[in-house]
Length: 533
Figure 1 (cartoon, rainbow, N blue to C red):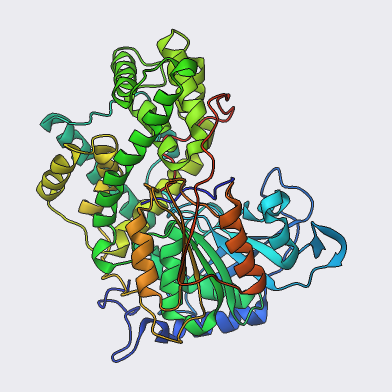
Figure 2 (cartoon, rainbow, N blue to C red; figure 1 turned 90 degrees about the vertical axis):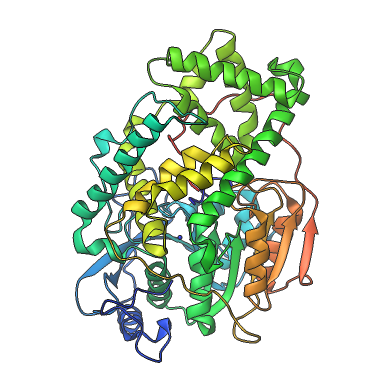
């Protein structure tokens, strides 16, 4: 389940290889992690100008840190992770005369799997992050396989965007056979392009890489913030290296129960998107005077289905078919600040003007390589992380049943994950995420009650498993990732924790942020074919 980018802007190794846990040991006892971290601490990171990352302002620094491809062979092949940093400003945004003491590095992961964090340090430029940016070096990086960190690929990027495509909510047997064939071909492509390295792209290695990055930054203990999928391997890190944690924020926490990784988490996600899809339609209906798409949720749904039928008959601009329409509106399930632009584009299209819809939903061909890479990493990590049904009849049974009550995203989610049924690398048994009393520093979990991409039950499960954690809930809201967003109550808890180490009681709640206003213009930047999960 992919995680989206930060609001404003996926086990133990299979015991059949030399990377297995030593008999009687635990995963963090693999000596390769210790060796790699000691080496990284000695070498550090040679930060300099970000010459290969375009459009960055002054003050952003970039560097590399080497990690073992296989932690069982720490002196074998190494790959380099691209790292970025903006140093702590020491400036209090509310008192220009006060110098803020540095508290170390704050490392961020935006999720995915497959999302790049290189641009994260720029977040310090926006008001909601200035106090945190005053006290911390803001550090982002590309996890293994992503972007500039030994990038993974499963197919030619030139063929990644397939053009106008159907998106049947209740697919025929013929269509299912076609998608099974495509999933098998994609899995073969991953194996052929990555070779034996494919097995090493997994969440446990992402957690181990994080400890090497901590050491390279010169930090004895890690301050980390993960969003969505980033909360999962952050929880793995907390389980493997609890004494290395200083402070840790889990924003939009996914369910870390080993039984959920990842097949069942995706089923739960598809069900949750149906509720969020209805939230969006109800909002549109309340603003019928603006959009004229219907005065009820069902009436808005009929308008959407009418657009689907028309796009199936004649794709907008030769680029946008039902699948592209669904992808654009799925983004509204992640972020409610996308609601006005989606409603405006649908309204204009049904009135005969497709320009806004094309701008939002047409595949961004210039971003094909980046999108293909993100999809390859997403697939590799989720497929490697745990067991998946290998008989399509299981997928067909479970999702046919689910699509009867949750048709919006169910089958599209299947097609995104189906290569895992035919995966050619060894599968892992997921690590049991759990910490006992006193093992882990108090951690902060943030969750929106109606988040569809990371359903709220996942935050509750994360809270139960990490002893001493505190859960802050944004009630009656569904934006995916709430740290540094429009809710001052949430941001207050985030700042109090990161800046002062102060946490509320075991659980706390915030009222929802304000709903978006109906007036708005479509974004100028085209949306990707599939947003992050």
